[in-house]
Length: 182
Image (cartoon, rainbow, N blue to C red; front, side, top):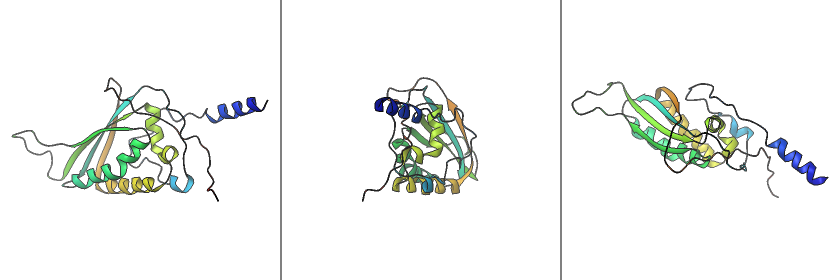
């Protein structure tokens, strides 16, 4: 009987479903209040899904790509890779030989990232629920603030198709609450 109760409790804890579609393309869509409401996280097993790739486009302030890239590499990418996303790369648009630059006022940047599914991408909007709110989460928030301060405009495009051999991994948080050991 005790085993049956434990199985029912476990099954009910695992039935939550993240949103199936992204709400919008806002660069500040991430839950920035999570640190006050989260703590350590233990992840469930990877969830099956149809892999997606995102291509995010930015117009950023002219000449700030090195700062934008550094914030991404040092504060955002490590956390996103921890929660199962796979960064393919980030690129600044350069003019073709003989062509003029797109604008004297802004640079254009593309980021390609792989996710285990559309649900995985949606779950990363509340990153602390999958990765906790430790020092790496604080670094994520600081880096997002830097990128936002440099951003003029952004949008994201979702793609499905065939990619390389190493899939991303989606391991949602279990929802447990942890108490500090005495």
